[in-house]
Length: 448
Ligand SMILES: Nc1ncnc2c1ncn2[C@@H]1O[C@H](COP(=O)(O)OP(=O)(O)OP(=O)(O)O)[C@@H](O)[C@H]1O
Ligand SMILES: [Mg+2]
Image 1 (cartoon, protein in one colour):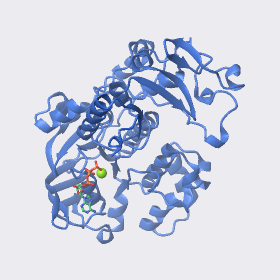
Image 2: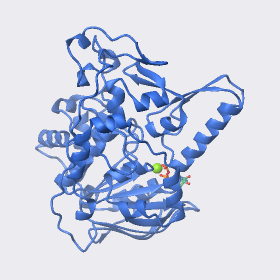
Image 3: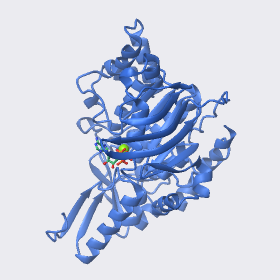
Image 4: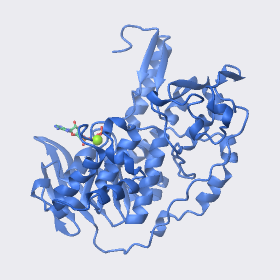
């Protein structure tokens, strides 16, 4: 529709966010061909570095309402000169999971409370007093490559990521925590899922990967008791679960918690964070005396501050909202956490800090995760096992290394082929040697 009026310029605001890789690939090819054929300029807004690297001629990096770096794609990606650009690239998940994703500590200032100097200074490892006084002007650092930073000539200091937590030895039980057998689900006459068999064991993270419309949300909602139209077996710790969450026992409801994709719609705007966290606890346990304590523990686990309890959702950033959703889910001390595309509305640095958090919780609490996503790089970084869903059937299931290194199904191969791979610039990799060292000491998923 946008192209039919033969525009000179077309603005695309995250057109592929939320789409799976094959659909994304199709959209990107169309955009590329249409721009070339109609001689049309395009501004493509995205937080997906791999897509940007493949599609754009020039990149403008924005931070807190200003363009902090702009240049040709090759220049910006090979030689990022703004510390924010550098750190953003380090947060991109690696398709081969050979380096960890490193988030950026802190968060962007609210537009109402921007610092008087450089807006990135409070999070910048290079910042000094001069950076706090006035925002830096644009400096030319190469042909058509401009940066707004007083320190653009300095290299980014080495980043040492927190090593991935070592998993405590889990009691390997013969019986899976969650077992699905011969599940068939749909909407009216439309059958969406068929012959689903899946077993998830305590403490593991199983990723559910599949293209848009393949039935990922339907399956996770069946598990959480939010979608009732299904037949087949669904067992939690050996006990069969009723299809509707209303017919499940309070204990069964407590044990499975669900986190929705969109943190902007999943929290009631009229309740404070403290109330939101307590709500499911009261629902499963009745009145509790130590409400404050429960809220404080849940906030701490989700890396939020105690004063967040008094805030309303609209006073939080997207990443903080998603942390509240995680805190709320954790407050009931669940066994299984179902995460339905919880990072797709968020940028790579927030995504990286959430993944970090989930990994930590998994190791500390022995949490079992069902992680739904269409991002293969993310699967490689968080999950130990992966189930590939195509048109409502699981076509491949196995360990992450096994499935991605030797995909046996044609559909898995096509998903991998359609995923744009993002390589870190050599300069960043050599400057961040500790990343490699830290990674070498990480336990392999197979030691589980
Ligand atoms: N309420 C509904 N009524 C009828 N059909 C539905 C309904 N919700 C989903 N569907 C259909 O069920 C199929 C699977 O949908 P589902 O939301 O589970 O896909 P998904 O894998 O989660 O996709 P996405 O990656 O886009 O979130 C789709 O074909 C969709 O059109
Ligand atoms: Mg979905």
